[in-house]
Length: 110
Length: 117
Image (spheres, rainbow over the protein chains, first blue to last red):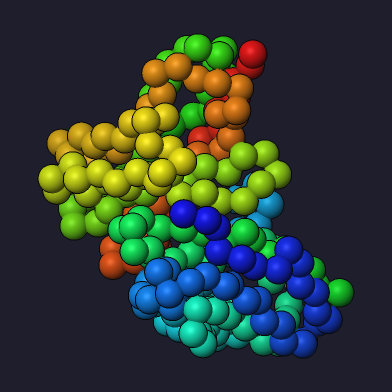
């Protein structure tokens, strides 16, 4: 099972919006609603920010939103803030009844 | 409060065995799954394996099948990840996570495993 494809890095200025893509296949991202996104700050454990493609857990800022088109899921961060600078990973359930992560995206706030 | 408390950092030599743990508290152990994730130095996250504590059903990612073993002790709400013969390439941080219907919502703090050759 190959990792899902994400851009290595995305940057944006304070207050801007950025979008991170996560491309898979019909056997994972495009075939199931179990797509989630995780934020990881250096030296910390991952934190769930989006689940089931577009749902936001309690306590997560509404600046985070998720969507999907075909085999590509996307995470949008609006009103970019300094604390959003982190690594972001998508994850999807797969036809093999296991899960797979994306390659990861480093978000830099300019 | 839901917590997953992992065992402390380990320093081992190649060829040694190791078992690390993940103790759950603040929720009913079943019906949630426990998953294990590897993060090698400076690299991304990789799903390794998953276990359903209610019946110990296990699923391994192909890359980790035969390389590690996961288990659970329901009586103490603890999941385990073990190796019989460590390699230098097993040096990484290992995270456990709680999951249900595709959502992995709580994570342990991570266990750093260092294997010297």
